[in-house]
Amino acid sequence: MLGLTVIRVSPTVSMSTHSQPFRTRFAPSPTGFLHIGGARTALFAWLIARHSGGQFVLRIEDTDQARSTQASVDAILDGLKWLGLDCDEGPHFQSQRQARYQAIVDDLLAKGLAYRCYCSKERLASLRERAIAQGDKPRYDGHCRDAQAPVAGVEPVIRFKNPTAGKVKFFDHVYGDIEVANSELDDLVIMRSDGTPTYNFAVVVDDWDMDINLVLRGDDHINNTPRQINLYHALGVSPPEFAHVPMILGPDGKRYSKRHGAEGVMSWRAQGFLPSAMVNYLARLGWSHGDQEIFSLDELIGAFSIEGINRKAARFDVEKLTWLNHHHLREGDPNEAMDELRWHLNRLGCPTTDDIDLAALLALQAERLDRLDAIAAESAPFFVDFDDFDPKAAKKHLRPVALEPLERLLAKLKALTTWTPEVLQSAIQETADELELSFGKIGMPLRVALMGHGQSPAINETLGLMGQDRSIARIERAIEWIQDRVGEHGA
Ligand code: GLU
Image (cartoon, rainbow, N blue to C red; front, side, top):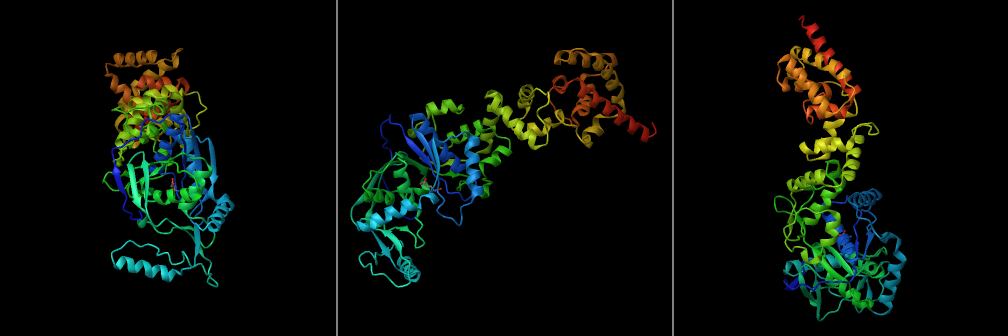
């Protein structure tokens, strides 16, 4: 924050409903992952474009070459793609627009709206120190504004001649009417001495060139907006509309950051969240529509409006995200969930071209589990043989007393000519009846035999999904395992 006195004149004012198509943009700096805050900004801008029948433009703000990386560009593109936020134009790269920035700077210089500044670092530092010592805000004093005599050997920066009198007024769709006195603003550097444009300048040229009519971004930029508006006026262009979105807080009420485990959007994929759940969650993080919590993407596009964006900072809540994930896993688009489950299974080395019915598996597992990473981990034995039995589960359930029930059941299963959960239920029940055992006395050893561990959906469903051949092989393996142990102990 630049520490300007931003006066929020009438925070309750809200412009009437807009019918124009909004052309919005997302303009990340590629210096890291697409994090939650960036993803939400992108989503809001995308939703407004889609809701209003406008367009969504992607622009990579990579003028800071030292901090920008290709890996980060890829991570941002991957994150947007995973969330389903397709762009109508872009990505544009600021690094490819240098000639344009230079042309505008030349034009501003020629018109006397900008000037070369030769002030040394030392001079600027002492100005700064003096201001701080006097309790003032550090501001450039305009030393080179009217005296542009070149200093030999010094490559100048270019500064914008900010108006010295009057006020900048604008309407923010979230914060209402805002005004800032020009006396609060100083002459902004628009081009560094190495010829690269600064953020405030490049963003104005780009938003103008790209016909953006609504700039939606984090409210950490709200103090930049008056400076940008002055630049628009100097260029003879009307500024776009603005909407500044409040920040996201961590559970401790502080700005959500890496400290809270804030990571790239793709790490949420690895943690088993669905893109539809993420989008639903992010949309509700700082926006509301009555008390509705659950939205499909189409519902969001239909319902989203700038007026529903809250001025209060929202708190990130992983429990709510998990709750939404569970909902979308059970009630959402099964194809999305299956695609994601395949991704998780493949990561675990499970081939999914098998004949396992993924839709059925997902429906069963989503009754018990709320994240896809857990569903995939627990479901791996349906696809690949497990190395060994979980020692605790084996110790408890694969005991000599389980031999007879497993052998009897095995004989019945081998003889079956249909393999449905109903038929399998009867086979287990009959075995239990014949041996006068409870269903569980067979069910648990059977579960450990099939899965290697003690967790699975209902056991007849588990058998059904696993298929006859694989189930028989697993039960035979468990029987042998018990027999080996019995042999070792001389029983
Ligand atoms: N590159 C800026 C950022 O990542 C974009 C700000 C804007 O949207 O104007 O914060």
